[in-house]
Length: 156
Image (cartoon, rainbow, N blue to C red; front, side):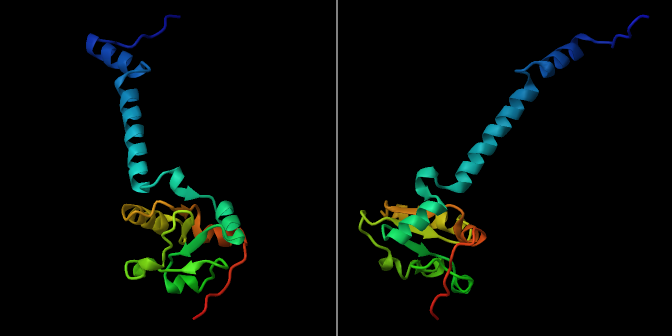
């Protein structure tokens, strides 16, 4: 039994072969799209892996007294609980209270917020002002709470 063959003209042949090719336009556009997405995500993040510490590291450094942890959430968020020993310095008051951030480069400062979005943005602003020893905590207090780690109620 004869096999039906599609009608292929010179113009459709070039399109069909180009799109089937691993380097055809479709694949090239897909790769360009992925590259653009990766760049956009990197730009939105505004910080790289060297700018952050894991939640485990932050907890250990705080407990050992090797780092100052600054909770930059707002006062109403602090009411849900804070890490024992963390300093409370709301992001909205940071400009007025910037003198409370240790300037000694041998004293690591770790910023923590609810999810890490504000702390990574605050890190960028502090770095622009010369605070090279500041990093932010991956995951934030929402991850701290999810893990069931102890929290304290801040003084009013």
